[in-house]
Length: 311
Image (cartoon, rainbow, N blue to C red; front, side):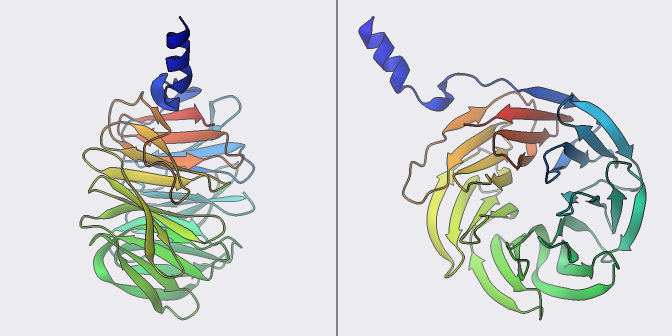
C-alpha cells in the first residue's frame, strides 16, 4: 500500500489524462489560428473554412462570426487595447472591430500567399509574413511602412519583440531571422532547424525565442547572441504550433501527433514534457495561452478548439 502511494506521488504530472475545460465546435474545416483578447474575455479562431469566429470565453458561446476572406485564414491577432482583431487571408488583412465584428479596414498585402499577422505591442503597426517578404503597415492608417525582402521562400511565423522595435520570423528554410523594424535591416539569422519553422514565440522579457519545426523539435535560443540554450524532442511528424506562458515558465506546443504538450522553458531544466493533453483527433495547428496563464487553448485540423487548465 505504501509503495503504491509513493509511486503515485512520484508519477509525472502528465500521467493522469487531462480533459478539456471546454470544447468549442463551429468551424467546418481545419482551425489554423487562434488569438486571445488582452483581457481574456474573447477567443478568436479561424482556418480553412475562410471564417473568423469570436467566442465569449466565460460561457463558451459564439459571440460573432466574420466572413470576409475568400481563402483560408492563416493568422489572427488582437490589438493591444483589445478593440480590434486582425485576420489574414491569402492576400488581404481584414481588421474587425471587437466585439461588434464590423469591418474596420482592409489592408491589401503582398501579392502572394501570406502567413501570420501581428500588431506591434504598442499598436502602432501591423505586420505580416509571407512568400519571400515581410510587410509592415502603420495602424490605424494602414499606410505601407516597409517591405522586408526575406532571403527565404516562405515566412511562416512572425512575432514582434516586447517593445516592437524588431520582428522575429520563422522561415521555410528552417532558420530564424531577426529584423529591425525601423530600417528593415536583418539583425541576425539563426540556422535553427533542417526543416521549416512553422511557429515561433518570444518570451515577454525579450531574452529568448522558441522555434517549432517540422523536424519534430522545439528549440530555445538566446536572442542576444543566437545561442541554443535548450531543446526538446517534441512531436512525431512535426511541431505545428508553439506559445510561451505570460510568466515565461512554460512552453506549449501542438503537433502532427494530435497532442498538446507543456514543457519547462528554463534552460537546464528537464527536457521531458510536464503535461500532455490528448483529445484532438487530428493535427494541432495552433496554441495560445490566456493572459492569466491559467488556461491554454488549442486549435486543430479536427475543426475544434479546446481549452485546457495549466499548472
